[in-house]
Image (cartoon, rainbow, N blue to C red; front, top):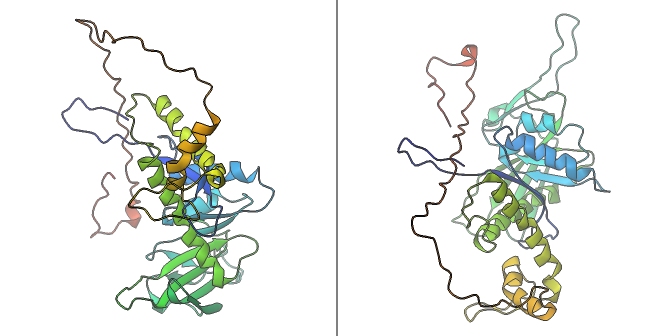
Length: 333
């Protein structure tokens, strides 16, 4: 957070990284396991890798961690090396991956990269090692292709499986969907028929963010210190888990314009949670009237909010040798 004395209105914001457990195959439930602020000295990739490492140490099984395209890069792949977890990452369609290097010829340094594959250029694609087509009741006819033993340029030691998910025929003829590119890293890869469906379950955490902001009032208070913001934010996972544990004991109480639900969503459980609170009671004593508050004394001037220095994260510039004469100069993000 920060304030500016130059007349410009700054945008105060806090970046958070959340690692959640998706407990069901369907629905909008996402249960946060780690919900922490990304400091100015961290990046989303480093924070996500740290959270994944801390969580996997306490698990008895090898989990499947799913991340959006902001983590589908060599930096995150390198930082998660050695973590006992399988990764399913989305990558942008303009990224390049490289195949296994050719055999060493005895002269010079050994090659690190092989065939270059541009995801947005079909002329550079090699023959997929596996292709399957499935009929999904929600998405229609779907084709999944797999290329094996590819890697990012800056992570040559971590081989990946590259997946392309393409919807051939949709339920609605007017809807066109762009192909989805995924990469998988791990030990035992699930079948292609179901692997791409795991990524779609990642969107449950997006529903949780919206639920935390709108229903749990995560971003409603305007705190003046970072510590207070972190303490308030740490309550969001606790509230979510409390609603999850109470979902079977709640009776649905829909509003007049709402349809009844058999499987309650987080919002419906929060809506019906008042009945549980009334049944279990509270250890706090009943409030006592204290009269009218005198308010702020005459002449009292409250201490102004503290001003924090502005933290500007700039985009890293490419080296001079890598810049094109026609490319614009990198500017601040």
